[in-house]
Amino acid sequence: MSYQLIDFDDDDLPLIQPKERKKGKKRKSLRERKESSSDSNPENEVQKDIKSERKSDSESDFERMERKRLEDLKERDEFSARLKKKDKEKTRNIVSKSDRKAFEEAAKRLRLEAEDRKKIVPKLRVESRREYLAKRKEDKLLELEGDIQDEEYLFSDVKLTEKEQKEIKYKKKILELARQHDKAKEMEKIERYHIPEASRKEPSKKYEEVDEREKAPNAEQLKWEQERLGFAQMHFGAADAKQKHKEKEYNLVFDDAIEFVQSITVPGSKGVSEQTEELSEREKKKLSIQETRKSLPIYPFRDDLLQAIKNHHVLIIEGETGSGKTTQIPQYLYEAGYTKDKKRIGCTQPRRVAAMSVAARVAEEISVKLGNEVGYSIRFEDCTSERTVLKYMTDGMLLREFLSEPDLASYSVVIVDEAHERTLHTDILFGLVKDISRFRPDLKLLISSATLDAEKFSQFFDDAPIFRIPGRRFPVDIFYTKAPEADYLDACVVTILQIHFTQPLGDILVFLTGQEEIETCNELLLERTRKLGSKMRELIILPIYANLPSDMQAKIFEPTPPGSRKVVIATNIAETSLTIDGIIYVIDP
Image (cartoon, rainbow, N blue to C red; front, side, top):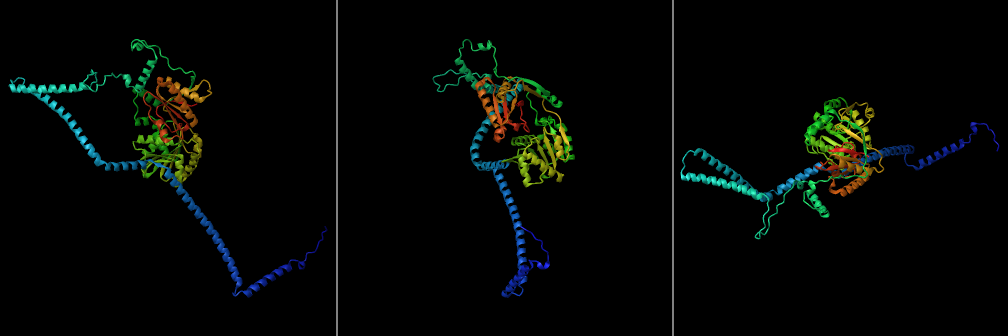
């Protein structure tokens, strides 16, 4: 291929003629349209049509965007309403149910009042007459005895007529017969052996002496077991010969007993040690609720804590387990007047059972019914009312309240308890409450926990001050096994039985990893205790984990029967916010 340079000249442009042709074509088409059109200004109309089309297109785009935005808002509101309605249908409102039940019972009582009156009044009349006769008899006997004493005192030196002497003898005879009648009635009540007679159709009940051992619990079962054992063993001589010549009794020996070594002793606070000495002197006498509150390590710091909350917007509170943070701080704020103007004090808990048990304890301490001034709110269960000012809830329920009330205007204090439980809900809560605390100066924010890195939380909440509560209620002795165990689940079972047979009374708390291990440990304990039978004291086994129903979880708070021991097998659900009375031994494999 070869290339050749040419000179550029304006006259030789090849594109001029096609442009002129195009313009000529346009003019030609316009001329034709002008001839065919009947209007006077066709060019102006074409321009107006183009502008109107562009304007209508732009307006339709804006309207379309606005319509989509409004539809999105409407769908969002409808979805939120459906979600709230669905949650409300699934949530069990305990307070409203109890009120409805009380109303139904009152209406039922009103309907059955006439029938009950007809049935009860005749019985009450008979009982009242019998009671009146007994009282009348006592009054008459006292009156007769008084008359005899008066006559003997007044007429002792006076010679009486024969008629008067007969009257005095008659009165004395009646008094003596009445007293003998009462004694005979008492003698009839005493059980004694009657010789059977042919004339009697129903022989009287044979006399059986009741021993003190037979009044003990499970006495009938023990008696039956001793009879069965007596049939299987050869015995001779007197019945009490075995007690007179007692042989040495041997306790149960475990082949796989586990040896422990004491590692460290964590002492309790001084004030509590003095109180425990007083308790040991009083033996089984328990402290009242007010004395128990005063014995908590947080009680001496009540005024300092309230002053710190008043002076600071955000406060980090750090204290030992059992110091009273969860139960006492909301009560102190309630007593200080933070619930005025229909404001609430909210306290979050990481677990459902913790919120329920703490709310029940605080309601008992304030002496109010659960659901009135003190209530709790967990998923699918709401135990609050319009009068509730102290509200315990899970972290998820507070997040749900953010949807309906983003500024938490109904709360004056928000307490995030057990902050070291780093869940998704608590992490989101920290960010939300931090934003709210910045634009709501009247809201008090308290971050409370037993073990947390206080400095990092203080930096996160804009260098908030830290309030530390020293002291521990009870001394703690820590023991370790001499050698590691291959099967820690079996080792837990053996340790529980060792404690049950060798240590003084006191409940046991065992920590395991999950539901499967808890059920396995429960089955192993039941199997071994059934083999031992009556050779051991009663051992009550109570599991607790997250999937367990609420009524089954609440059984761990029931008091232990006298003479028996309770074993609570739990996951980490019992690590925080749960105070189980009577726990002395803790096993953590």
